[in-house]
Image 1 (cartoon, one colour):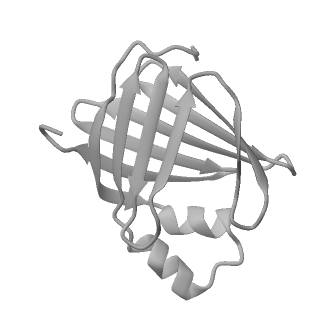
Image 2 (image 1 turned 30 degrees about the horizontal axis):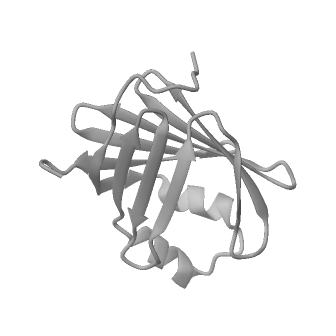
Length: 144
């Protein structure tokens, strides 16, 4: 059952370990990708930092080939971003047990869902765009 409040604290730094089906997902997400752009995306090994204070989150993703992405959000509150190509994106984060769910919708009602599931010292990120699903695995860095 999805909730708008957090009962877990997932603060920490998570380092990328592996991917499954990421190429198919990226092709479905951005159909105009060149082979060179796709290679750059597939070669990335992100590090995700999460800081949590109750229902307020700060999430920073550092990628080896692209600028840092920083998100500040409160569970259950919709907020908007604009993509580099000018599309307006609606975002909302919810919690379901040990899962942090991010839902994005653009102006054409295209829907993307990111599900971050936390188990022991791992964060499993599932990316969904239509019927295409990819998975990324991250390991929590001890002591950070």
